[in-house]
Image (cartoon, rainbow, N blue to C red; front, side, top):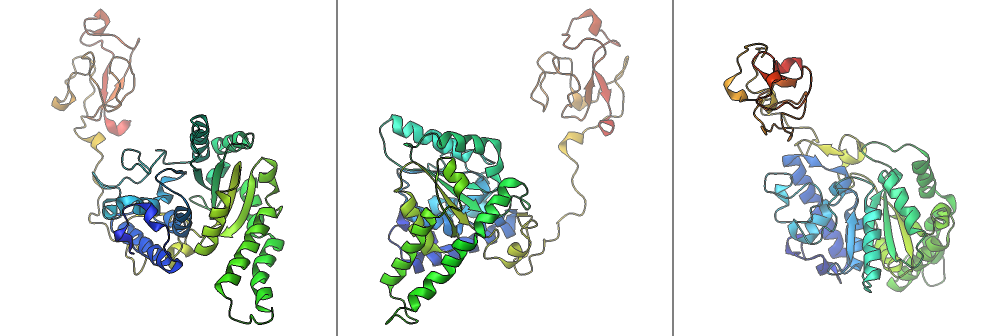
Length: 404
């Protein structure tokens, strides 16, 4: 099966690892081609391809709800939920939105684009599910940068107080926000990623199995599964995630966010554990495109660029177009008897609205679409017919936009 054949994420169920890896390559190719042509967010989505495939291999997305914390990490999600063929219209007029959009797809369950909102939203959905006597899964996917946000921490505090409410939080830890993370929480997560006992175990399980009699260099699928199960058991029981455990979560991880077999096994285990569960997934921002992996800040988002060289394409125009705000600028001051430009209209007319979306008679200092500032002299909010608003004594002055 190819990515173009997928119209529903549940079609991933039952696919082999080889098929899933081929789809992962197609997702990255389409993502790169689209952003290279139109510009947009690049590194975040490239880093979660295997995470998305592994999770969706386990979930039933006709019932289960997934909330992505940052919309531009959900580009693989968009391609897997029926929007692949229109993905080239990303961030274009009448095209695919750059963030999650509920009216765009029934698989976009929460419309926030940025950041730290996913755990609260998914927890609310989980509580509603329990009140209605349903049993589907609710999942929040949040980055390590967004985890430092106040709303995320409030949600962790709330969820940890509800041991009977099943909630899965997937921590996508790529050590980055737009730029490298700083602070105590990122420092703690980095220690988890580099935990010596866990790293030793991961590095040595396979070697120990190979040393068994009659095994040698060739590991059967059965022994491969045993090896993976031992790793998962150790991840659940290890205490490197003690902070999350103390906050009421079952902590699993960290796991390799680009190892599909490991991701599928861990997500399958996590979705059957009771209460709030946090799966710590270590990913690489920009995975699969060398320029983005080497320059994670610069390739967080890009204007259109050359895929072969990674360099930005030359702009079609050397001079930027003036903003609409400056169109029709008039240099005249509208003091006593001052003439107004034709495109300015009657600023005093009651109810006249500007680009600010506010009435001219209520707000001082607003900028009109013609580029003039409304300044006040005396009280604000006079209406037509007010004797203090006579010619030469009105509230509104025309000030050149260049002086704003």
